[in-house]
Image (tube, rainbow, N blue to C red; front, side, top):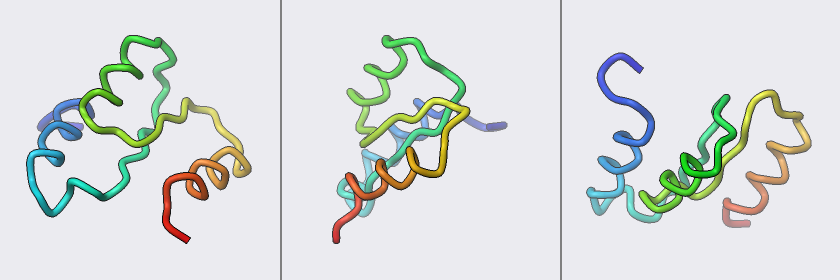
Length: 67
């Protein structure tokens, strides 16, 4: 992203009350645990590494979205 990275975006969104409860699903090529843990600590709801299947996305969305 040209202005900020994903971690900064997560942190910025979570500072605003309008976005505190909205799920954030990270879609990334990153697979290292320390980045995943940092994203979750900042407020990411889930993490999916590319490439991913439609089934993987569906399972993640089913898990984080209200029914």
